[in-house]
Image (cartoon, rainbow, N blue to C red):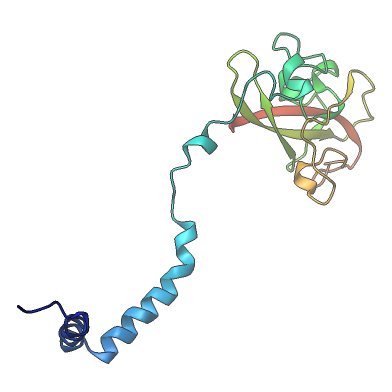
Length: 180
């Protein structure tokens, strides 16, 4: 009776493998694997749980729990979750339009606000209207999920009149960009 010899089996397997491959081929495969390895974390991965953020009342911020959709002249209007300044809707403009004589800044800061009517999050671009004296009506300072000043494009403590004829601040708008 012949017993199984693991050494002989391993030798036979390795000899067959060595006979079918070359050193250059092995080096090429190893090099390809080394070049491709850093790319693996960038491949799309199904993150089903990450795609469904928690929108329960307990997970919402204080602003999101109290937001309303009817009156855009109030600081608790849903699009104003991260606005800082006078509301253009109280100063002769609209939620997304500057009043006559004021120029919209080409740059903005952004926020993610939850619409209480549909429970979905939307990206809002806040733009300052510049070129007229400051409108002192309906001043709001909402800091829902505000980030520190070292991330300036998400911070509302900056006068965003860059790229306009005048750096004089008048009021702020809240332009709906799209779903977040």
